[in-house]
Length: 240
Image (cartoon, rainbow, N blue to C red):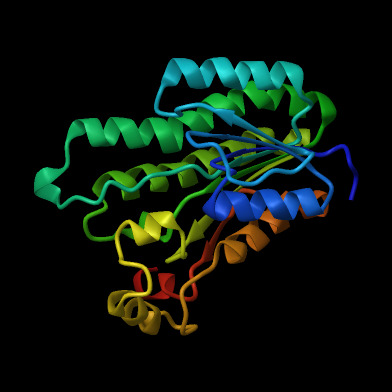
């Protein structure tokens, strides 16, 4: 693969983002991670930048800076948070915060990076959504904001297709990351019971999603755009 590929990955330092960063690095990419926390690992082609993507002003500033200083070919919007709450406890602030993180950050970065991609007649934009976009108990704000990514991706896929830019979405199911363990105790009976309900008989690993992201990212995948791929071990079949 060409060494002239540069990817920005939000939340690229841990979990699914870390797995994606490392696969892209192994494939020869330059990788820039944008997130809240400093990764506990390093690579000579990996740069980590701190930014709270719920902060609109900070996000706009960083996206513009990166677009100006780097020939970005790939944007992977992976950062996310859940805020598990029953209907009675959901606030408008929850909707605002998760919309800013999941959807508005996607808009801000895509608007900043698309002009350069258009000039080069090549780009790959990939959003990490969730199987919860189909609906999931106690996930009002999360499901709403993650589902919105699909509509935006399909719209932008149509607008950007003439410029060699694809826009696709991943919808992971239960993946063993810190977000999962925030809700289910690690290696608990609850975790094993959850795994038993997955048709393939196990919970997902971050690398399962990263593999799918690398497919969408491949320069040879230019005939695939506007798609949502469920990486969920089959659980989306129950609600799809």
